[in-house]
Amino acid sequence: MLSKKARFTFATAIIGSMIAMTGCSGGNQSASTGKSAEKPAASTPAGKKVINISLKADPPSLDPSQSNALVDRQVQNSIYDKLFDLDKDGKIVPVLVDSYEVSQDGKVYTFKLKTGIKFHDGTEFNAEAVKFNIERDKADNSRRKNEMNFVQKVDVIDPQTVKVELSEPFSPFISILTDRSGMMVSPEAVKKYGDDYLNHPVGTGAYVFVEHVNGDHVTLKKNENYWNGKVNIDELNYKVFTNGTAAVQNLKSGQLDFIDEVPTKEIKGLDNNPTAKVVAKAGMAYQGFYLNTKQEPFTNKFLRQAVNKAVDRDAFIKVVLDGFGTPANSPFGPGNLAFGDSDKVEKPNKQEIKDLLAKGGKPDGFSFKLQIGTSPVNEQFGAVIQNMLKPYGIQVELEKVEFGTMLENGANHKFQALQLGWSGRPDPDQSFFDFVVTGQPNNYASISNPELDNLAKQARVELDPVKRKAIYDQAMEIVHDESEYVHIYHDFNRFGVSKKVTGFEYIPDGIIHTQKLDKK
Image (cartoon, rainbow, N blue to C red; front, top):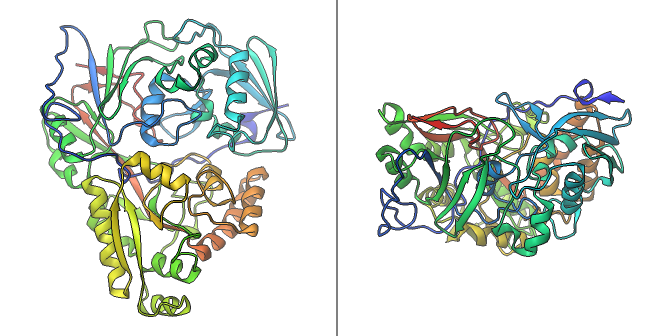
């Protein structure tokens, strides 16, 4: 058997992070709280170290098997350790796994686990727990089912060794274990709480769950027995701020220590601030909007193409992001294995767009409804799209929708157009397969193209990186033709950080990693 390090490498310095374009319910925050102007700021007991982190939306689920939102991951990464994770260079490194091997045919993975680790409820982390988690993620009701579809069998060799057999080679497998499929939950907690487990999450991570007040905050406390080094902070509070400007005000006043996403318009105001700074670096995501291929008017491919080509990416980035982004025409940003010419974008060609409208039977244009989030940035997103499409007779009606409802509408295909992005993952498959293959969970646009399905499946089982890249290039030609999603830009992760906070290490996954944080 060959070691994984000898057989695979992953290029992961991918640009772009999902903007707060899908925030939850709006409202004005005071300078002391994340939800209402009436609630006073909580006092901090003397000597207690507390870090307050703003989230652009309320986390829908803290259960990794059910989660599908970036804000979930912000909290989950403090509660759960993963089998693997990313380092500051975006490279995959073992965490709960001590060492591992991969068979010559790429179908058998043997994991040797670290020892002496316990879940927050005192139960042992071991090979049985890994088997439980993988099989749970394979279940029909799990959002991780597709990621684990290739897993055929999980065997416990001994308490610290687990063998995973795949039905065929699956290139993204280790990369998938750096995300929610690699988060290890307590089997006993799942058995105890059942469907209510999302309200009682238990992992092995640096922080222990205390409470989740929907729409307001999630509180975690220090894991006093953390296996992977000292935890310096006594309490983490994730506070919901749908208004990014209000979050910045709270950061400046000291009521917040972190902002998960600084509005681009606020960056200059923090450049020389004595109490806070901005960390703006390349991430892994893309942003844009879906066009529902099963609802009029977007059952017509030519009309989808017209909308796609009418969006001026450069102008959008200048107006909405103040230049903090790069134009996108694919889910693959610079640094991704599949990045290349498929991501290049041309300026809108007026005659080409008119020709497409004529081919689609709507030479004078048409109208459609675009669902957007409720924050001011969402509104700006929608207004800019409206203005860009209007000269072609394409009228856009904006409908503001709460974040959780947007996810439900996407999953149930209840929209004409829907503004949602993706926070990105290290392997191209994780930003592609679920979004374009017939019947997959993130295929909100309901695209169904047998040739595209086949190419996406080929890319998953191909182990040669050069051959995989060629397959993705071919697949993207079909995606551009289908135009079921309008890729607009690759964003930057934009964290606001108090200068009292120390130990922060930027990781290109867009997550605020809290394990090593301290506070002056």
